[in-house]
Image 1 (cartoon, helix red, strand yellow):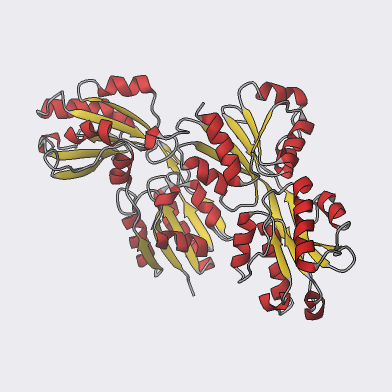
Image 2 (cartoon, rainbow, N blue to C red):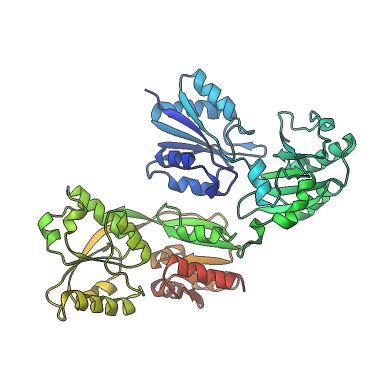
Length: 502
């Protein structure tokens, strides 16, 4: 029995503008067929075993013809229960979603539609331009500037002369001059305000403002790139009052964030929220190490020490695989290194009893010792049993310190494995590279010479979340590393913010 295909609008570019239903389907999908205009960050929400198929269309360069995409959707529906066709903007606003839906219906495939936010409205809004405004525009018209003949001669410019109607042209960057000239020839004032918005709602958004008479020259001078949209009408004048997106603290800054695992980076999200362009690159994968625990041995543990969210997840996976649940931890105390680790414990109905103020081992161990003495008495060294779920390839520094204050058992519950990665343009063009763990530094710079790192530092700032990351960078050849004063994603973000706005 064939599965179901969902035509999902991904929104105009900002991944935060996808709908709740659209995101739920992305997380559920067995296969995602996506195009060039979809926010690539959305793919990181998919299941680990999801099949990804790129069918993007750039100007005059199509990965697959539309007819081939239609057939592909039918084929994949016969292989998977849930197929998501992820399309930029809204599926039915010049997205050819209607053609795909009709083809699926004709071939007996069930389909659903999840509308998306169109760039026609959101792109203008992110540039500070409302498509309607009392006293200026009572309606708006959305027009495609790209037709089968690739020409503007069939546009009815004579019907576009109402000054109270905002005109929005999609896919028209190469035809800005023709459109402006056509409107002027039809009778629209050459002084009519016009704007061209490139890469709308993304950190690469650029907006060029002028009038019909000079907008072609201004766009050429600005060197805008597609995808782009054109907005024409008096509402463009409101941009000076209403622009907000291009005024953010890190606007125009570019950062590289190497990460472990495919999940979206919270650090990247913090940077994007302030207008930065962020390139995420996965340099490692998390692989759980399976083990079974007995209820009796868990009951004998006095305290569990979790140092990461991965440690929590992989340990609890093993607890569940042992046909146990959170109750098996009994009355044991739980220590969590970092607020996010403590939050992850809550997903399993567990509350951290102790969350230290500082996370590096020099400060952590004294805090742990003080807590254990307060909780278990003045002489915990030979009586308190502590389990420490961690990564197989984590160093022994913390473990070596722990065995001096308690009976500590190290559990290797996951492995941080290296994976292949690629940066098409290398390390050039970034204002900063942010490292959240030592292994990301070791892998990103593993084949980079010390001299190359010295050259990189002339134009790119290196940031470390804590001492271990900083030491790994210095070992690789870095001479100046900005270390977060607080060893959290938020702390690293604030370190970047302080540097970025200077």
